[in-house]
Image (cartoon, rainbow, N blue to C red; front, side, top):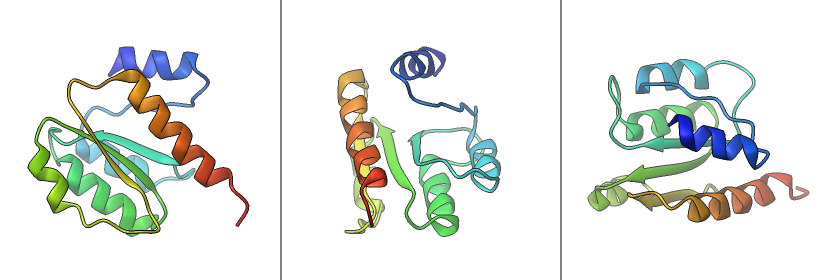
Length: 112
């Protein structure tokens, strides 16, 4: 977590880190809304799927990046054509994550 956050900050991303699923949901309920949720599937006190589902209920256009070593999880996330849900497998490759974040950022910055 902290190494990843530091690398992302060094690359110009604004990053907030929470330590469990319950804290993530509390954060998603407060303003400002994050542009992208990057979550591990396995979290204490609410898994990443619960966090992503909660976040999407509040913010339907929330970009979600799910990191998991359980590929069967992918099938449980209903894909939506208008909202990207990206699955990345562990071990996480940093360049892959930044490529995905750049793509999500481009979508967010595109004129409506």
